[in-house]
Image 1: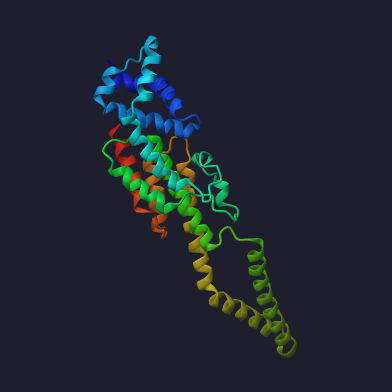
Image 2: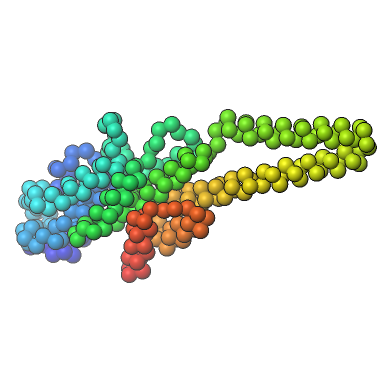
Length: 281
């Protein structure tokens, strides 16, 4: 008869073998999530736990008992099916397993025609169902969800604001500034020729001040947009650390919110939960 302590301390290899029997395709993140979910499910199934032994000589019997115990797998497979709706692409491109990978930060820095992020609404729905469940607990899944939601929200904002700027947009902005500068210079030269260089310089300075004043709203808006996108991007960088600090991540999310970023409620709930757990350790 195995104990809960033995399940979490010595049962990993047996759990992995049981997972491999049920899921022939491998992915290191999904496997870790499945190990944690399976351990949690077995811990709450006293009858199955009583039949298990994690001694090496009992390995095959234990793996078979885990693999064949459908009541334990039912809840896990239901969770994975619901999560699959968030990471699937339609029509199916056969890359659902690859979407367990984390998105690189560089994908926020280059313009893409195809959205590589998971569906934020489906992720939020899954998080609500996960948090309401009485049995599932997986730290790996929780931080994976945090990363996916931060990336999805940041990518969506970047696409909405047109970040990063395309070469065409940058050329257009540079061209408008050049035209304004040339107009002011031409007027100043004309005035200078007719009324003296000093007046021409004053006219040119006044022109630049007027252009700056009239465009100040656009400049301020662009600065605010750039700031909030940068803070959201920084939140994702922190979340991608191998062992992200929940308190530091929570502070990064708050800084982005102070700059008018809007995070999903489910993301904030997940991070708040991670902060509470980190303080209990």
